[in-house]
Length: 280
Image 1 (cartoon, helix red, strand yellow):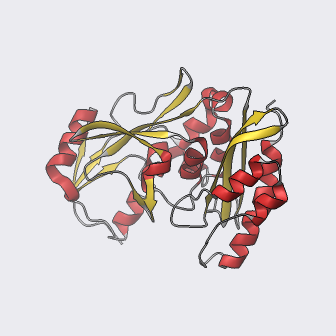
Image 2: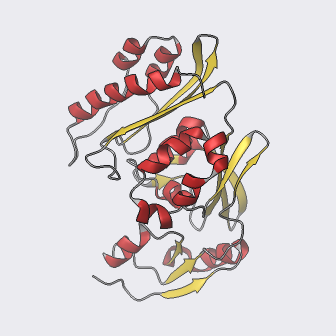
Image 3: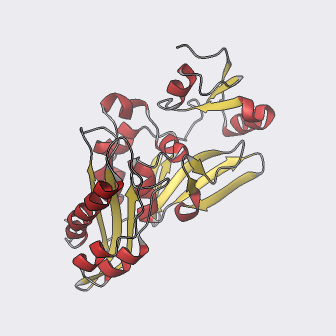
């Protein structure tokens, strides 16, 4: 199929993009990497009057360490993030996840902010952001604001973004000597959406762990933190953590809920071992 007719404009500044969103409201869509939008346009699941290309806005693709935080611009391509020395050194969980996102052609065009805004519950980056306790910078007609990852993902493809708002950047804590991270997923083929995946972070405290954050993807309408399992893992008991997994996945085309629950336990054992290994 071909998309319905629409007008096109390329915003040169953030202010211009926000002004256009406010003017056209629900009749406008943002174009960044287009990996999800182009498909919905072609299937006429989306039929905007105006497409606002934001790829010309300067500095929205910057990646930098700023104090104790790593800031990733919304327009940073997945491939750019994957190759970034800043990410490799200061955001190792994201570095672990990047090769699992789609295929090279997708990573060359897809954007970090686009993945967070689309909020696919089987996607890697929303779970990484949740596991790291990151925050999202948002701009809109009412000005700029920040939202913590724990409050951002609301439901199936639903986020805290208000109408006519856009993501400008994402920030996560920069890794230090105490940070431990782990990542694993199970997919039918490398690059496919995960049947079940797990992103995790923690702090080393002597021989144990504190501030354990587990973020599963592919097991619910949003990334999911199993709080009881986090507490058990912080106590050093992997078996208890697996038994305490408070997940409620649904059957889907990839696997039954029972299978997903079993695979979640398998991944927890793998990731727990990663969390207990000192950083190189």
